Image (cartoon, rainbow, N blue to C red):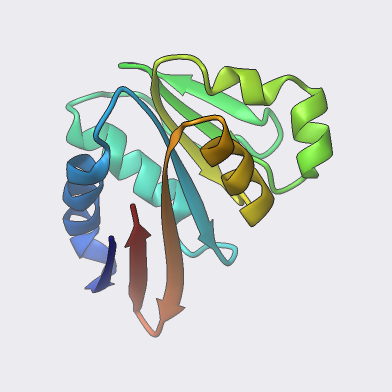
Length: 138
């Protein structure tokens, strides 16, 4: 099921609410795709905030992974190839119960996760003037 939204930057809660609807189990991987500064980390930040959590959400570009309250995991694979990500043992991290947000996850990672039986939700973010175009494919 694909849904598209064209929103002002202040209306990101609409996308967060939709994500909460499509995340159907306690082990879900949300792959975030978009250009630099398109709002991938902002989406994660607002998702965490919507749960009433106070965690400091930043992009884990150099640490690769950040773990927040309520079993929310955040990965950034911008600086890693899929092979490097696998060699670091990061695929096994998805076995931890929770919602896993992956910035810059590619189609190969998506296919591997689906092959392993994970629920995968794809979110693409595109800039359009002062707005964002969000496509959620669940």
